[in-house]
Length: 278
Image (cartoon, rainbow, N blue to C red; front, top):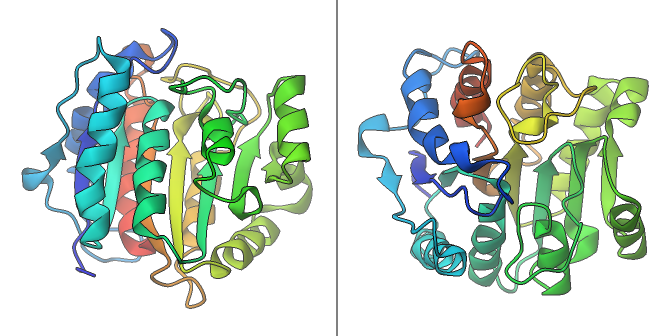
């Protein structure tokens, strides 16, 4: 695998039920803000070439076609084993990306780690919206439910809670994080990732508290601080999980709802620090 990290812009906003249409502008703004971070906190140069970022062309008015285009565009990157970060866009992009990723990793132990304020298991819609991606991924057999971990959840519907309990999907709530502390949760994340040959990481910016990321479709109080999320991600720079994270997406940044560019800048900081994690 190349030491460089490929950045792909996935500017989809039509999978958000009207709550994140402005997310189409997030990728370019995150990349622009990332240029203001010259080194990672470990003192290394970020492993990106911001000038050669690829953009997947999408038709916002044809949602099903957009998802198919995302899946097809990602398939070659996964087959070529190109380490890639996909910048959304709303969280619906995770469905076609994981679908393509799972196909490319057939026969391997494959995991999915999601940072999110929500369970995203509301309905079994086809195609799924950003509220339904976990149901779709599990019901279509893309990733085994016991190989999924949701982190930072703090608001859910009763049917979502019932779904993840029935399917034995693991989750770490914000209440647990507050109770056990970042260091203990970081150990659990390493232990989870260690189990797999290949892992897909999805970062929904609403895992952050709205004080740190107000620019998102569903801002939920009681979330992680930017520092806490950085610490959890940085804990994955660990010998036991080195090379296991094969792909990442960052979603639900909505510049149209942002305040003083707090959310865009937080996302840019996370992007730069991921360079040391992968």
